[in-house]
Image 1 (cartoon, rainbow, N blue to C red):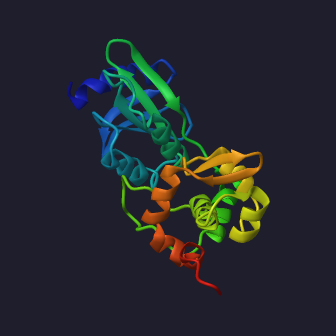
Image 2 (cartoon, rainbow, N blue to C red):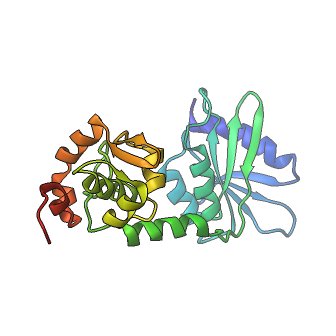
Length: 231
């Protein structure tokens, strides 16, 4: 397919809505005018790309109604289709999908966009920031386990149980983790085991984790719980 193959179906699509359509007006791939209404601009590319987005943004310096047009992918829209639509929406750009054999589908019309804040998720992120001790992760890394506030709480519980099983309430007091009992019951990392009603100890995996995370436990100020040193 060539970029020029997108023009006939786009022209037909716009003319069916009463527009007069002309190609290559200045730097604009397509300009469509209907009566006294503001012009509609369409920029075409064979795939959705940053270059196409930048073209659309440049045309917005001239006209308000700008569409980006790409062919319908042969293997379906990419996994980030929702992100593509969201980006266009935030930039007030329209999005047209062209199938030369079947016509054009408008996925999004241009218009003002006011993002709705996800206050619940923002609150969770802020709480994570406030509860996490230090800055244990390296920014920009991938494929590595992250040290979260929840994981730090689990390490506190590990340290509290280093000397032997305890009641959940005692772990909460010693570790300073109010949710210790729920955390150990959920056992997300496989570190804990219930040895009796309301009493928890370390699983074999937990003892391995205790040795593997000595440095982080030390940064949390709990090395003495493992070594048995007095305060």
